[in-house]
Length: 103
Image (cartoon, rainbow, N blue to C red; front, top):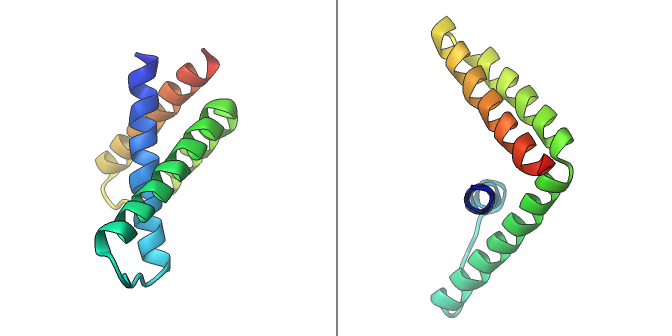
């Protein structure tokens, strides 16, 4: 189970780093498109590995940050039932990260 959670974290952080990279920068590809895409995917995968390692090493800090981010997202929701769902999802995610990081 731990290995699958680590794989899920790597995939999540890889996708998140790609999204953040493209939100911050306007990306133009010059030359070989496949070469540039592979470099970008490799860089995002490397960032995902590093962030997963940091999350599992500092699991207690990651769990606190996840809960705080969940509270921030819940504050933006208008529906009271939606707030409960958002907080619940982030708390469950924080518990999973804490469990895997502790073990």
